[in-house]
Image (cartoon, one colour):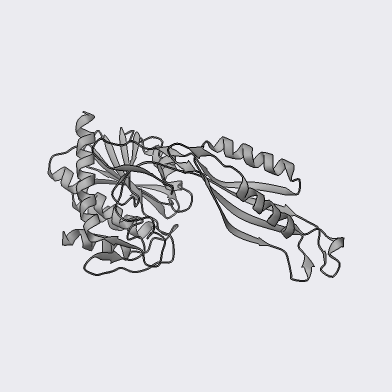
Length: 336
């Protein structure tokens, strides 16, 4: 399987930080065309393209992952056990195993399998939303993320917002003449962390992360403004989270908010005989509404994703090819 490992490294060594995915899409377009796939590039934004490839119609099942990575770019390397580099497990290793499995499925006469690789998953899922316009209408979609080769029974949703506090500037020697927006924000953040954002039998508890905090103008000025970016991993409906936030802000009149990301918690299809458990991270699944029942499966560990030491175990990559092959073949055959 040296060719699989080579493909993973080739993909890693093409930088594709979100917004700069064109080169890797063009590389895959050439590779798949050489294998006999009909390849279609779908423009999402100028210079940014999703890629859809298949050999036979109708497409019953789609193998899907994303072309983009977080930054910074890190070139590939390997040792006897692992391949390293940006995207090794999130998600270029996944991508390479999907391509390899799709080629094998075609060679073995399994028809109706397509490949979909999208832009923008790491930021806003813009590629996934545009992909719905391709008109594929498959019955199943296997989305590839690093689940350590276990089927995910579901994943949490996302609710990200900017919380802003307004105050009154004053000289710091006379703080009583002002009203510190930073003090107001700190109090609000303490309360936000104590809010019950929901519980779920499948997903457990919602979690809250205060990602960034900024504000003020100088050390000797009472801060007139401050803001924080907050990310809630949802286990219930987005509407419930908005209601919680609306109520909180209504009780704190110096606060306003702006929602920047929202997606529902997801329940995925599982299969008898395959290990399955929920994951806390998100995926493009909530945005891929036109591709049938979702499954979530891929090699690598989420704990390695986005780190300087990102890696994928070679054996896990090999195992993923077999898993994608088995699951895809089963779904195609039982959908006939």
